[in-house]
Length: 107
Image (cartoon, rainbow, N blue to C red; front, side, top):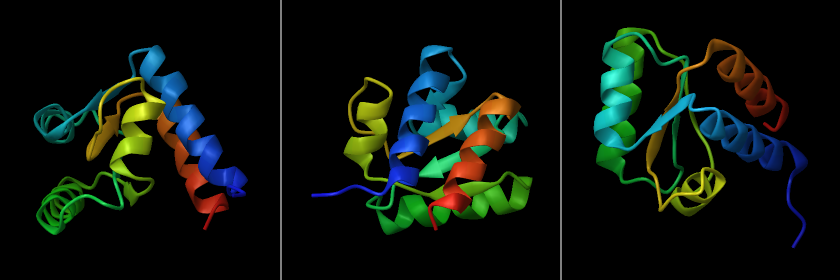
């Protein structure tokens, strides 16, 4: 099974951001980051529940935070060395911009 190069790049960038403590993950932490204006980018798993997808996309629209649907819950968690994660927020603007660029490249 061949993987799309852009997708690998997004997950590896998330891993780097997580290791440098520039990612918060999980529902509560992501919501806090968005509402306190610390989130530069929110990533929502493609296989997250409809409720989760709607809640975080609406929240990001309201607080004007960019967001993307990318990867599976397992892939997002694995990229950060954690259990499955439905949502996460990148808190460093540099990482957020770089990941956003790779997201648009892979579409």
